[in-house]
Length: 304
Image 1: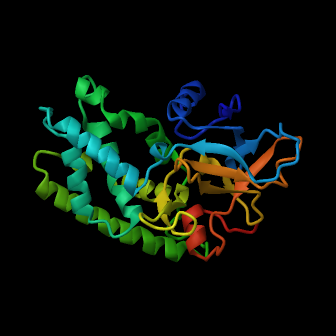
Image 2: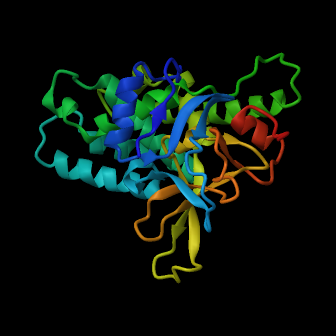
């Protein structure tokens, strides 16, 4: 089942809908959904199955290798290391990403993702775009999604804004600014002849940090050696297409993992699947809706 994108839709970071549809297909992402205009961008069920369902219906399937989390990024890094063994590139992709991880010294899954994606963006901007090393890099498969992250509308305030969460936002920005300054200082010292600040400004660093926070999901992961029926933890994960789903406390769908192949799936509640007309599919971002955390992460208050 091919994901359909509404004609004329503007998706921030996507220059060509046709090319983006090809990218989705190339990642093995499929489902009975369309991407359309909503609160920004939203997912819509086509309402083509009007038969009663005994179980909740899978309407989107994303292969785990088409998501970004600690596990899939480590596998990608391993792939880069194997490729770099025979490379004479002046700046090897795997070495640079490892160095960024060491410098940022991630204390959370969010910062781990940030370290990788800052590395992806730096290598994309600083690499020799005419070289085979650049053109054939496994990182090219993530350029389209990186553009979406860099164009995601994120929460921001002017210093004198009267919004009640302005102070909290200022505190968050100052914390990230401190992390950025430390990152640039160590990069200047530990990676000679490479000007990281020239390609990674604070605005870009903060944009990626906020985009990861707003788009990532806590996806279930089976604990190794555990009981497959009960032993699960969660991975902070970026899931393309699924992350277009909007929030609603009275959500009509939820995400899960297919225990047979570890695909990330979006399931529509069975009572919704009988509707004949297309309708928007929503999930719950956070059942707690803690303020100001929810507002700072997603840019709106959860009133619905």
